[in-house]
Length: 528
Figure 1 (cartoon, one colour):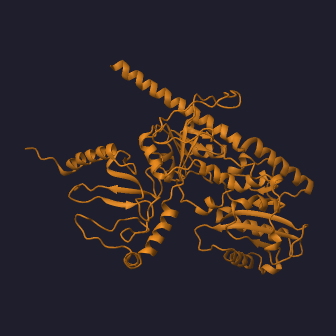
Figure 2 (cartoon, one colour):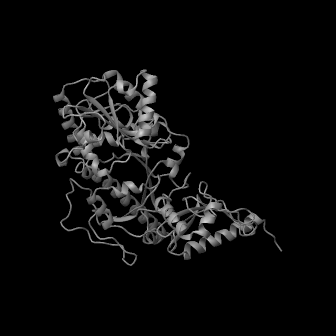
Figure 3 (cartoon, rainbow, N blue to C red):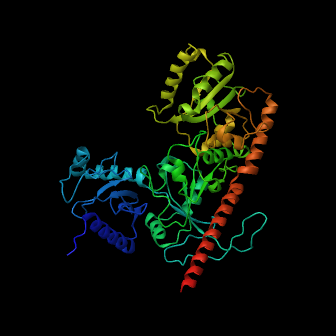
């Protein structure tokens, strides 16, 4: 009798279990090996009918060589509120074979047993914020009906044909699935989306179980992962799986703010078929850092020039109603929007402002900021930090310096166009931008932009449409630059323009995948 070493026995058993599960798994669960390592699995499951309903949970399973006599280590990559799951690491505090479970959260356990209603409510909130996957299904034109699991998956092309000069040729529409990936979901951003955008998304909403049914049973020709490479499978932290296991062509869309590539990124990026970056600056940085040159494609970001349109703003944001000092129509307003971190150059901004103006000048610097790896979170917190910095930098209290107004960190998205229009100029001397979303939004609103001309901003800032730092000019010149800025945003970065670019790349890739399938089919036929 031949006795196999236990690891080999385990591998055979695990291979059989994985194959069986992939073949017969329920619609609400998917499982796959991580990088073809049979001892390391990733699982995605939709929450059952419970406080976890509506959530999509990502789990990591690592099998010991002693399996099945020792249980695998299982941890949630998605944060979950449960007494047997450590909230920070996601580890499950139980070994059903060898050890007695130890509750990681005694307070949670107490709440679960003594006040189940409160426990369920908290678990539901966690599920909503941590495990909720905002999933929509769209067709290529954002106008067709979504495909249900019972549909065949094919549709007729739209009537009327296409202009070959303006749009890429497409034989038939394709189905597009969108779900949250990378950073955690921001429910307030979703809640405050403009009504027309919300309704457009809600028209195509599908339930998570429907999404994972499609993911399991449909052919995935192309997966585009919009995140930093650390989130790509296998992810370094809690997030949804991307790219999916069955994706035939994998694209990573990413960027960074420096002239160096973070350690480990080139290796991860070179596992993707393509890397999409928003700027030529980023293309050079990644290629110089070791990413395959032929894989990097420049696909600019979009600015919604219909939403950020100065002619559509009826009521300008009323800053005067929020300030403790007097403002008039003649007050010059400088607006700056950024995360509160050193990279954004807030100290440079304040120092320059204090040097350029005095307390007698009719100016105000308006800041819209939010905390980033800091305990500061309110307008009052940031005002205190500014006051502390001012006392050290210029040795003066704020009441002896040009005026500053800090807005509440959360301004609804629908109010942003009116806020931009309330400003005379947008200013941000940051040390680096991957793209610079506030910059292009301000430019679309015809606001003259004063910003660092380096990194991502070099893609769209020019001498004709914006100002480099330390440039003085006339009011009419500033207005002219603002108008030129909007013209450039409409011509180069509007949804229609960038949509055509993205659609062109998708069409190219789908044609490539189809050709590869034909080659495989032909080769198989020849062998037969």
